Image (cartoon, rainbow, N blue to C red; front, side):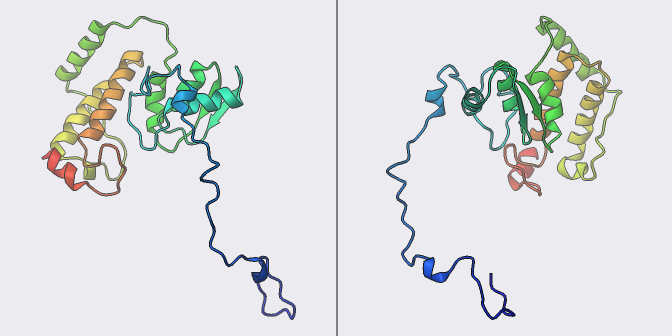
Length: 214
């Protein structure tokens, strides 16, 4: 930095100390490549248990998270993830007997974590879930529309109406693991039948999805 008002000027980076030679990459031969899949061989499937409930951009594979947890924490420690995304850290923390605090600007986290890390002990019955799904198809008296400014921009009118009926039914249910399972399914359907891309976030309608929805 130079101040033209000073007679003696000082530079934080004197030019005489700056090498004129191009920077060479001398680390290429020294860097050791690491495979987290090999370091954590006990995890053989990146989508095991509840990790694959929802897709999410730039999602860590659980082997990376498990390695960091094993290396830098011990049982009963607290882990804070300020960019929790789809909750991979939360799932791995519970499995590793750690505590976790998760934050994210995406409110999707509030819907998927109660299911990804379910605390109940009750045995689940497929028949009961199927009965609830049948009731959802038959019961169309409830409506729910989120208070989002541009929600109609992202959906065809008939699809938005149909989804509002399905979400209305879910919001009429008592909270349970079954209602959470249905919510996750509706979250997937709500994105799949919108005008946004499945995996990438965009601020405008996707031409490919416009054709797909039509």
